[in-house]
Image (cartoon, rainbow over all chains, first blue to last red; front, side):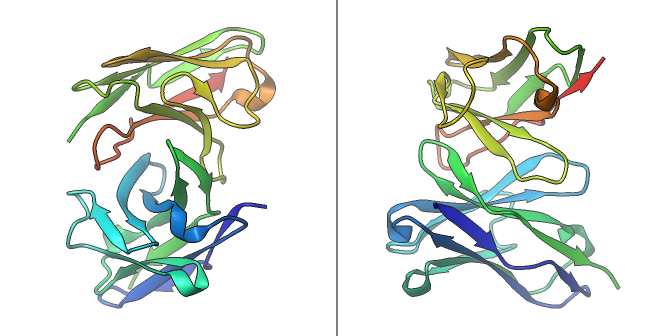
Length: 116
Length: 107
């Protein structure tokens, strides 16, 4: 079965760092782009950026450039989204998704809560 | 950045009725438009890609049309499980923007 499994929910304080993960299985992880999508509470979907695990080519939405870092470790079929200094406004559900002609396979989401 | 505008924001319909959702792009995206369905507490699910191609396992009551800047998602006869939020997304450049969503609710 083709699937993406994300790491569990996180509760952090402002200023802390965080790295969440997305592990692919059931397909050739290095052959498909993986994207990250933010959904703030009660809001819509926002495309954050995308990485090609085969060579770590990475592209960011202008809205998220410099705010997060996307990376991947192809040896363990895992993509990552990380923050160096979280803000309360980073509180959201974060999804990873596999890109073909669209995002065809989605992870279950990782809820990140940032609160003092 | 290409902006996608969905209308209406909310669509109130009864089961069995036809739903017509619109997505307009601020500039041409050719046929590079997808539609997703999202139910509360769930990840989005791909319905349509490249404007008119149904994704694997998607029922035939879902259809997509359009090209350039104007696109439509049609649900021919609403089933109870179709009441959800629907998003369009473009992939014509590297910034894959989403529309703001249309909520299809039970009337």
